[in-house]
Image (cartoon, rainbow, N blue to C red; front, side, top):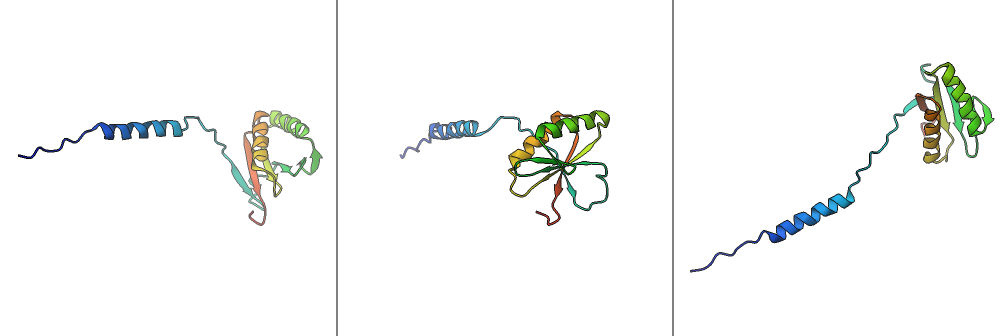
Length: 126
């Protein structure tokens, strides 16, 4: 009479344990922060009437057409937010400006009291 082969569960348990350890080490348990951004189209419907335009250029910033330092821009915006908490801010980054710089500016505007911040899409759609 032939004996039946005994199937051991040990290798299966080892594989499951290795997969469990792999996914535990490969997973990230950080709480990622997200930004809610709107995109204002150039020549839009006027929903952004009265918004302040911040142009993010290579080395400097322009607020409503005036070249200013970042601290001066934030101080001016802070004063506007005190007068009107619903003040809208449009950010128009120049081509080639790193995204991290734009996000850092959004963070600083939010810290100054800005609640409605949008990016301006260029007319070419870039």
